[in-house]
Length: 232
Image (cartoon, rainbow, N blue to C red):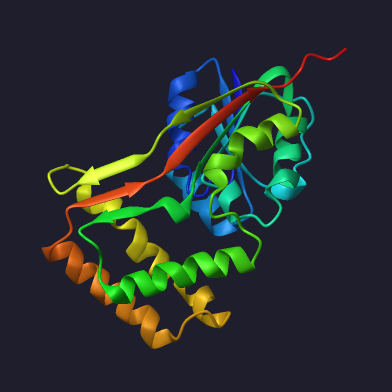
């Protein structure tokens, strides 16, 4: 089995795919970031069936080359995800499968209600994404996107991430939003959606809430798969 992992970042998911396909399979991870790929290559240097290449998700050059092409939490960041999906379809072999996994950020949910400083950031973040052409409900649109790209046998599964304070993964999963505030948050500020003081306050308020009152976070996440038609 040959697999292409699009937008692989540091290769966390890509490495898992390589383990799943085993030594008889091959996996290629691609990303636009040289720094992330260097980290991925160093981390997985001993895995003979895994390699990494620089490539832009919207300008993939592969043609009928892989049995499976995946994109995990990637399309959500694109203003024109259908262009990237078209490249993924071109890269997969006839009869091969596309797998896309993405959040609908507008459906994130917390219990109890997080601090006002954080919710202010959250809504500014959604506005910033929408203003840039990103789809805040893309998980719910994946099935239609795959069908519109010409794929057959489209199926959707719910992979939503629900974590509660009693879970062993609670701290790691809850770290998603502090990470967004610390990274994407600066872009939100630079584009005039929020003041820097508000961004910083959001991070502090969320961490305080996480340490004391936070009980639950639900991230709405769907996976969609589809099959490329056989050549005629």
